[in-house]
Image 1: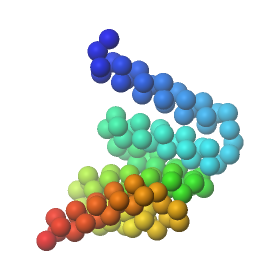
Image 2: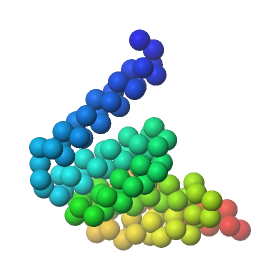
Image 3: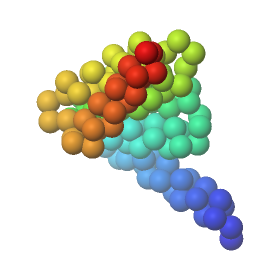
Length: 122
């Protein structure tokens, strides 16, 4: 089996687990994590419209600080890739940084993305 097929299989397995979590729990924070996993999978698969929709869904479901801040960070990355989306991206990065309990890695990546964007405007 080649590397690509192995990666595809792992992605399909992961998506199956996230979908099962949605069926087995009715707790919003659990659903937020499952939707986050599905959104990340769509992001990796370059299905950006689905990824964006699912990250927004995460934010509606009372996610924990890590899940919320990562979702906001990825929404910023998605906005960065859209024509004219730089201003919206900055708003998502700022929102990620304002989450109480934001993980250090999210803080670092969001700050780097913000400074990279401001450098590109000069």
